[in-house]
Length: 346
Image 1 (cartoon, rainbow, N blue to C red):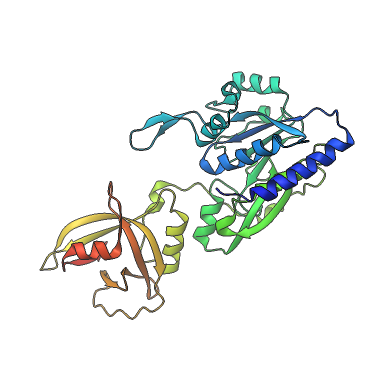
Image 2: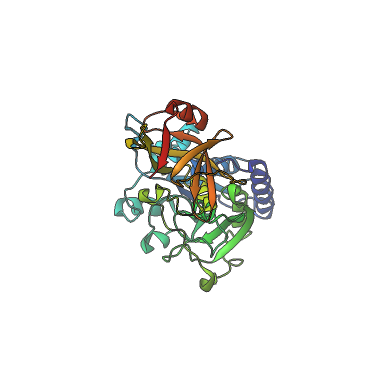
């Protein structure tokens, strides 16, 4: 997750200096950051940079993240990307908390001892109970990558891509018990591919009294849409759908879980010979679908792409594929490997 870090620092630093000028002896506000994946690590980076700038009015008192887990092929137990970033920055390890659940009494006791004014969450991945939300005096604020109340839920970026929208954004929202339904402090419209790149909005949290509650606006629940968590079984492509639907799905699921299709190689008598499971890596919608085939299930090759006939007389061009456990291959390399045999979608 790359960010507009220069703008972030300017806003943080300028505001912090202005606030300090009013009351130079004011104790730095204690901020707790909560996040887990790589996209959250960049937000933590911006906060740590801003907190160390001259005149900063806050400091990161603690980092809360998911417990270490097995990752990569060897399933080696490793800290979350956020925990690793904090350690790389020299953040004290005893102030990096990794509770299984945010409602654990030991964790809550340690959090209370820090007397945090504000908690900021960014893809933390854990439900925050009411007894947690009562601890920070200025509340808990979530960085949510959509223009709320649109795309409430666990997968707002992916669902926006899947829907084919051109623009979404990022919102700063107070966390309440209802999912992504709290008052919105600020939001910024962005291209959908950039909607997780706006942590500069965090500067709006630090007004002169340390609270953003005055500017927060209630959401219109009647306009809410949902962005439910993506499930592994959704990764299969159904070619009875139109090509643009499938293309948007490939884009949305590119990171995880990916998109898959089953095909079979036909022998000389057009009998099924070998059924393959392909991971579809990159695609585009065919703009000139003039391929003439008697069997719409037959996959053709044109212009360096595997051409799959789809619903509504549309076609999807698959540019890259991957076999389980293998490297990504171009459609051209895959087609050459068929050695003239036919390919059929299932």
